[in-house]
Length: 158
Image (cartoon, rainbow, N blue to C red; front, side, top):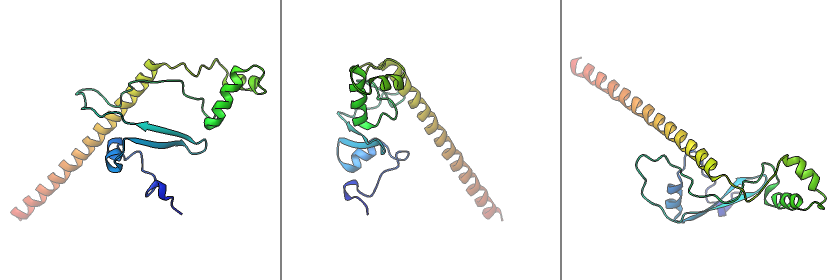
């Protein structure tokens, strides 16, 4: 049975642009579930939309706070337990969590420059993919026009 709280169902993220979703739904805050198994729910709040800067590849990281939790830590509750175990040597899972993470883990440490570079690389890849898709569509359109013109020439000369 469909859940009426989620409308007609999930949107295909490969085909939906954030601005289109926001305009369609009429909100500036959205929630999405990143990992169904671990229930990582994210809230995205759009504070403002500005005009694009010519020549800048989008998306752009403007700020980052805190480090990403390790993969498969067990969702928000598992992450809280993980952090508790790391900072408390008397915690029953302290040694296990230290062995599992295998290195020093600071939840407040964030490498904004590396993350910005990663986002810029994604933006560039997306731009190239979009450019490639536009080129394919243009070629298909030109081919159809060429076919139509050839057919019209045949009709006129035939």
